[in-house]
Image: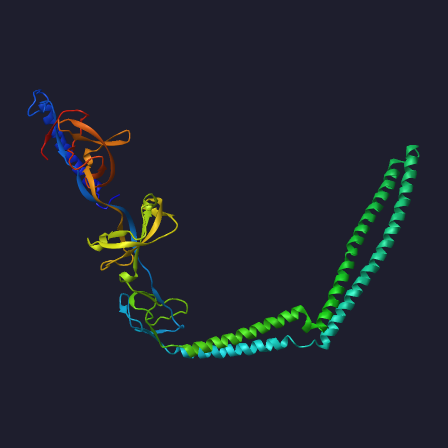
Length: 480
């Protein structure tokens, strides 16, 4: 791309004018073609053409990209403490110097800080008492209660064992009864088979066996359930013993140690809180002053409002050229032409027709996708440092034309005179015999309606309207 290239609309308008002129000349040539006699050595049927000499011209190539005016450094004013703002001495847009008065605070905040200090001292006393409580030895009542828990767990286990013994006796008796019932059933079965016993007697004998077997299953289930009480009683006894040991050694147990350590932390934090509040009281300031020179860009507070520690009050920045840069986004297809130090011409609607010069001061190392209009394309971010910046303001969107190459005294030919076949570019040169001669050229950058070309020189006559022209055709040059 070239910084001096005309817009597409202007090119189309010029091209249409040239085509109209060429069409008239072609018409004249056709009319002359009916005559075959030569005049001044030029055949009557020669096509009338316009021509132009190649000439030398400086071509400036550039890459165009949009950018944003940004600040390099800003100073943010943070409050030293939280207080009510009594008076504001500046507003957005004011220019200040280092040390200028910005804000004064209401000193009644000191009363609030003193109240907080008193509360913090009470919290410290409470934490110290809690720490002392973790170091008190167990009382006799606590020991007796723990020993009673051990006796209760042991008695519970003895009761479970006694119940298990009784259940075992019951199981043994049921098993004997089952054996007796099975023998009786077998006898009745034999008598039934021989026709002596009835079906009812046999069914009753089998029911007796089944009832005893069900009773055995239920009793065994009861034993299994009761047996679970043994480990529970043992665990209760173990926990009770452990509790008694922990009670006797309460101050040496990990839990007690952890509790004591926790209370020690609470005491330390309470002391730090007191120190912090005391520092706030000692460091309370009645005013805020500018720490940097520049323009007030923004403010987040108002008179009567409160400052909040850690939240900015206002932002100050130098808006002159020393603190401005322009961040532009160069499409990746043009990025290979960009180098640090190249000049850039800055323009834009907000600049009122003025243009400024700058230079590329930094190229970001990584390209990234960016929304460009309705599409996303990969761009390389480039920083341009501007020179004079009377109309530049942070946040403006501007156009930057980065000068990538300057070809001094390049030979150029009319853009409309160039043709191409099979990727080879050429023009038609008028020979001394008034014949059109094809001359192959290498084209380079173009500027306006001309394009740089090698393969021709300034003495050649280039046909500027090569429509329907072929190699060796008689032509009649007309004045330019």
